[in-house]
Length: 296
Ligand code: AMP
Ligand code: FE
Ligand code: FE
Ligand code: ZN
Image (cartoon, rainbow, N blue to C red):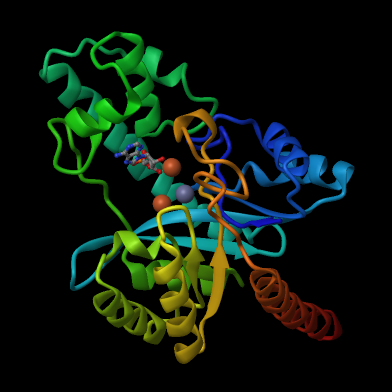
């Protein structure tokens, strides 16, 4: 089984990297990608466990970007054959800084609504990077809401009472950063961009001209019919296909690693073939650059 979309507690999942890999291996996963939001720091601890257990692990990241001119927030997955170069990690740092600023403002908004949260109690719920799910957990712990879902519906979700817009890098800049870092890009959960298949196809065609490499055709939010349409669209545009459960542990109840919701997810072998070939080609190119650098 294959899963190319998963989160650890280095972002907003609830499993530590090694525990996530163990859980994946026990669930029958043979190829896993960790794709934390805005960070690749979970990769090395996960890799150690993956090597011990003999499963294949890809380094990944999930990035929220701003797509002009539609003003949509578009999530991209980035995949690497190993840790990306330092220049890319420095670029990620800018995003992490923007997140910190958003978090400060979000806390202030919640407090102005009379919800007495402190930074300490939110931060304690995160192992590393603080995200909205940690604010949601804090609101549940205080008894202000009865579920994570209610926390998002009432306060944290887009357009809700404490909603704070985040400074997101442009889609074009993000695709360029991934390409520069010899990463492979995939459009995460495309169904969130448009429900209508035809409109979605047009967005994907546009992003393809901007340098997108693949489309996440298999995800718990995507119906079998839409999956089929996305695979066809990707093929017509010469794009690759990826898929994964978007596993967040207890922060996304009802989603199982590898199989998604009610065992309805099945990421086909073709995904593995495509990503391994693509990353292999990138690595081979990288190797050539390295040897020519050494020769020169
Ligand atoms: P952040 O990156 O801090 O803005 O947090 C975004 C994360 O919050 C997403 O990756 C999801 O894990 C979670 N999230 C976003 N919207 C919802 C929602 N409506 N219900 C539950 N979790 C959500
Ligand atoms: Fe998330
Ligand atoms: Fe996402
Ligand atoms: Zn995700």
